[in-house]
Image (cartoon, rainbow, N blue to C red; front, side, top):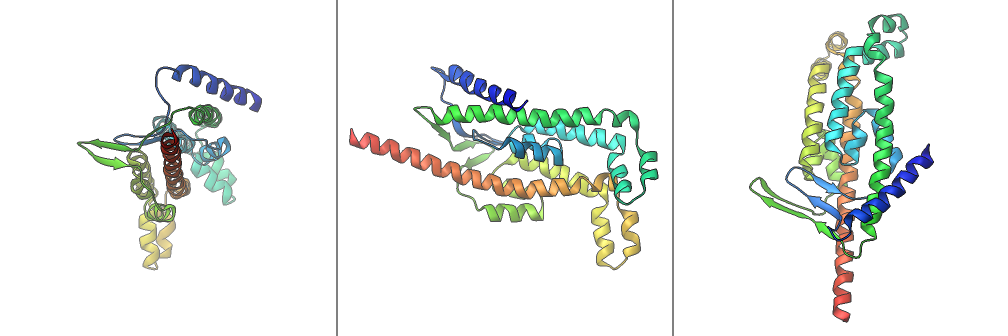
Length: 268
């Protein structure tokens, strides 16, 4: 199965080369109004891991924001209708009889197919994009579109502090992405984070905890929504850090390429 994906990556590499000849240079980075697109190598198993954590995150990790939003929406719909998170909570706490009673089996039967396909698609797409990244690196001319100026503002590719990006997302997932100038990714994460936060009752539970009203904590929590929270929070922090590292790497790559270009022109 993995050899099939590798062959597909090689095919994507060859095909992208054919399609790019005499038409355009594949950009290493392209900054647009709402997002920044990178053509870079990524680990397909990391994409699969984030998809396991919450379908859609693996695609957002690769910069496939529309697909990621579709998968996330479908995950929350199917999971909520099947009452899967509540069943998981009852199972973990040793109440298997309650877990079996709350599950909606009509929706539950849909979930494994969707879940497996999301992992398959994340791995396949990552291999495909890695083929494109290989083609980009082999081009005689490279392109770095690191500036976007329009009526919505000015966005540019600059060095970022990965630690600072992670810290901002540790406060609120999405803030680190805003710091990195990933507007679309930040908007997606913040919408889902606050939706999960409010629906789970986590804020109210934290308030009762601070006041010492521990007997009110558990009734305030909705575990169907609460079990989404760790995945959203962890991805927000990890993605902000990794994205800042990638931006710095691209900046260094652009600097080295331009220096080599200027040195070659100077020797002629």
